[in-house]
Image (cartoon, rainbow, N blue to C red; front, side, top):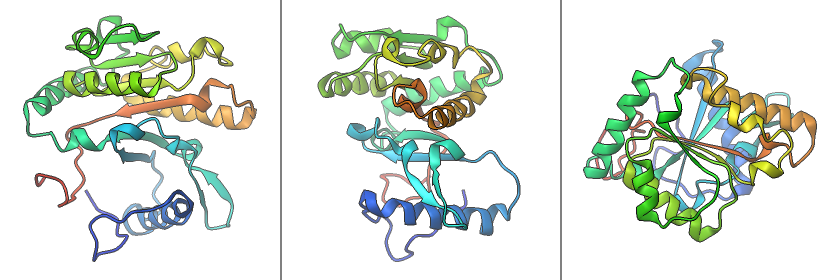
Length: 239
């Protein structure tokens, strides 16, 4: 890792949403000028979030480019979310299951996933223990329905406990969305390693379409690679 600098005197700095455009502009400028040096790249932005905010619309955050134009980050780059709580449990029994499942992800990296590796959730009718049993040894969860706050909490408990590393989620019932049938094709239309790129294309399509009910406006991708640990001494271990 090559950490970007916000404030060398503070490990973690709280920010409010109104400050995000300036922060993103500064970090992206630093990334391209100091590390990538203008080289072409397929940049992925990983946003670590507390469990209760994993469905936050981070892909809709905007920043200003060098021409002072507003850019929506999820339309320009692949944006995925990460679980900050799970990161702190990397060296526990839960972390062991998570890492074992990620090895399976790596083995299938260049493949189109078979159905046996995916659990699809179309409605919440089970409590967390049953949800966990449904997720055991699966590497991808696909969520097609709107979830209440309590349902989401139970689902995330099951995801963390079962070590599910990838979750493709729609914030709204897929059947109600424009082009909703395309949601199911995201896992079928190419190798697993390009999933975040396919999401980016649909987010851009939704932005160009202008219809808030376009399914690209409601996509969340939890992409939790246990091997990618930020060099943050505030965590409970050193990477």
